[in-house]
Length: 183
Image (cartoon, rainbow, N blue to C red):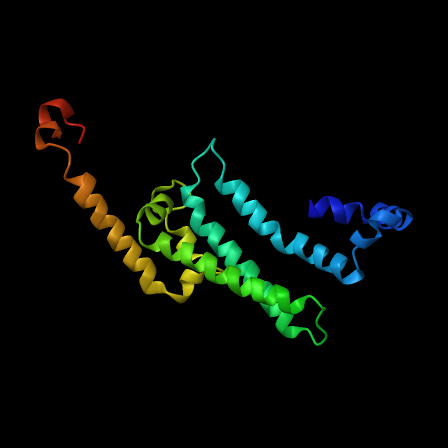
């Protein structure tokens, strides 16, 4: 909706100006500025929602990546605001919203650290493995012990839940008679 309004601003403003009954709904310059900011700022959140809601492919392994992107987006906007010498009229409202978003995302992110499924989904993904935890721009680079902890816990879960679950009678030992001297 914001995208459409911003794209059609050149038509909306003159049209509202010609309609007496709609003039009270005309957006001021700072509200248009805020709309453009929100359009760009909320894009990563829209992308995350669309990606995670996908039903045709598993997306659990993408959860960490999505959280990383959302936190990075919030950090970038905070950094930009911190460097501004002149702040827009709408700045304080957005700053408060960003702080609340940060807290809300953090609550959900902390829940991903408890269930091992999120970590295991990345570790077991054929292309991901431990790559996500070792990327230069990952928050995990600041916590190298956390990566070790994830790996040890994942190995322990595997050994407990899966490695010992195959009955020994089903394990076929290679016999010399079948090798025909090739080994």
